[in-house]
Length: 504
Image (cartoon, rainbow, N blue to C red; front, side, top):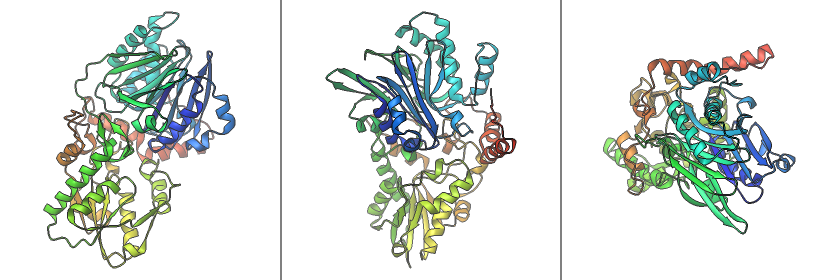
C-alpha cells in the first residue's frame, strides 16, 4: 500500500508535494520521494524513512519546477530500502517518472518480455519499475518528437492490455505534463482535484481526497476504473476511458483500515462506512452474545474508534479510552517483519490501568490479520487488571492472501487461516471473539450515491476479481514476500557486503 501525488501548478510545487506526502504518511512509512521538472531539468530527492526524515530544507530548495509527482512507500513487493524508493525514472522516451500504488499480478511475465523483446533493463524487482517500462515501451512505439494526448492514451490503452492486477499510478513526462491512470477494476484509489489561482488553474492527483482538501484543492471526482487523465504543463485537462470496467470493485480494506476517516473514496465516506461497521457489529454481538456481561467498550486506537463508539451506543454500554497511543510510532501492521511489529506494539500502546482494573472489557479493533498485535493488546489489558477480555473485529476473518498491493501474501502468517473463530480467540488470548460478517461489511461500505454493488474482498472471501490468481502464483508470492523470505534476503545482503540487484 502506497500513497501517490501529482501536481501541475502555476508556481513551485515542492512544498505542496511535501505537504501532501505528510497527509498521506499513513499509507507508507518505508520510503518517500519527490520528483519535479523545471525547464526540462529533472530534480529528484528520495530516500528511506518518514517524509520528515527524507526531506531537509536544502533538499526542498533544489526541487524546482511547477510540475511534480511524489510517493510514500510501504514495501508490498517484498523488498525494502532506498533502491525501491519511488518515483522511478527512465530517460527514453521523453524522460518519464512514475509513482505507483498497488501490485501487478503478471509482473514476472512482463519483466521477462521487457528484457527479452522490448530490450528494457530493470534495476530492481519492483513491479512499479515494470509498469513504468511497459508504459515507456508503448510510448516508444509512437515515436513522435513531442507527445500528444492522443499518443499518451494510445500507449496507455496498450498498457491496460498488457498489465493485470490492482494499480493506480501518476507519471510525469518531462516537458509535457502529468498522467494519472487506474486499473480497470478500480481496486486502488485515485482522485482528481483543482483550484483557481491568480495565475491560472492548478490540478492535483492523489490517493485520497484528504490530500486534496488539506492543500486547498477542490475535489472534482474519482478517476474512473480503466480511465486515464492527462494534465499538460499549461493546465489543460484531457481524459479518456481506455479500458472497459468489467467490474468496479474498490478494495474494501481501504474503508476498514488504510484510508483516513476524513477521506471519501468512490463517493463513499470512510467515516460513515466505519460508523455503519460499528452498527452492524453491535447487532451481531447482540445476536451471538445476548447474555454478555460486558461492562465497558474500549477501542484499539485509532482506526477502530468510530466503530467502537457505535457498538457502545447501540448496546447501551460505557465507552472508554483505555489505551494511550504513542504518536511517534508508525502503523505496526505495515511494518516489515514480525519481530519489528512485536517490538513496536508495546512502545506504541500503553494501557490506562483505571479503565481495566476489575472490569469485563470488550476490545474493538478494525481487523485481525496476523494476530500479533491483538494478542499483545489483550495481554496488556489483562496486565492492567481486566477480569475478562472479549474481542470484536469490525472486519471478517482474514483467511486469504491479498495480492493487490497489501502486504498479506503468505496465508500461513494469517492467524485466521485454517482456524475456527474459537481457535483464533484462543490463539490471541481472548475469552471470546466476535467477527463482522462479510455481508454486513459490504453493506456498511455501500452507499446510494456511490452505486457500488461489490468490492474487492479477496482477503476475506478468497475471490480474486482479476481472475488470474492461481495457487501457483500464491505460492510464488509466499516464497518471495513472507516475513521469513524478507529476513533471509536482509541477512544475505548483510553477510555478503554486496548490494543484491534482483532483475526480472
